[in-house]
Length: 195
Image (cartoon, rainbow, N blue to C red; front, side, top):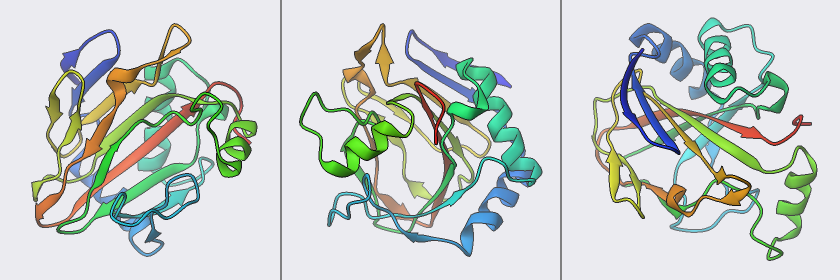
């Protein structure tokens, strides 16, 4: 692992997964892809990707490694992790500016409240780039103006909360794919055991 960027809330590390491990994750998710939603709701032209969820008790070595790395980097147990979300962005697809935390200060819909009951809010997001043979598709953090570009095997970790307060610097966008296809794997880590 090679540390590329470190701040009080954002970390970028290269060579976390091998190209072979990335390919194994892509192969695992490819046949199970469905239209991505936002907390169970499909919002047109906002999140236009496809995704697949792989249970955290998987026996697939590359996904087990993702679980272990996530546990190590967040210092929270595997039981707090959601299933691994493998995401595919085709040409022109994107995920507009959003934050990964679920609680919006009393302005939650029923789906969000159900999600919060499953283990509290998402304290951390841990994202793995699985390929880099595309154009575009960076992850842009709006408030600090930082774009993290896709690189195979790269891991990006950010805190959705700092000292119990929503981290507004974590607002980010998955920029549109200009050419090719982008694959990522994401782990969201909850406050408590995820049911």
